[in-house]
Length: 102
Image (cartoon, rainbow, N blue to C red):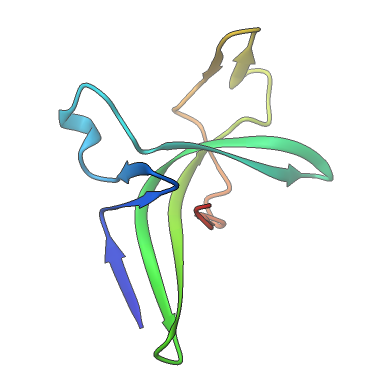
């Protein structure tokens, strides 16, 4: 069984999927350490949805459904000592949108 939510709280941080457009502050962005072509990389994206999967009526797993920004190119990502700038028009890993929130 699956349930869909528009937000949740993980490690005392509240994530929302549908409120950022009408708010001054946003809480849908995330950074996840991962692997791309055998090299460690930080994946930047935003939470599109929260899915809770229930197995055998007792075991539950919560997943974030994300949209990932393309950070695999120097044309789409620039960083200095204090900031990371990402071209948010370019998406990446569209067939692999899920991550465990922890």
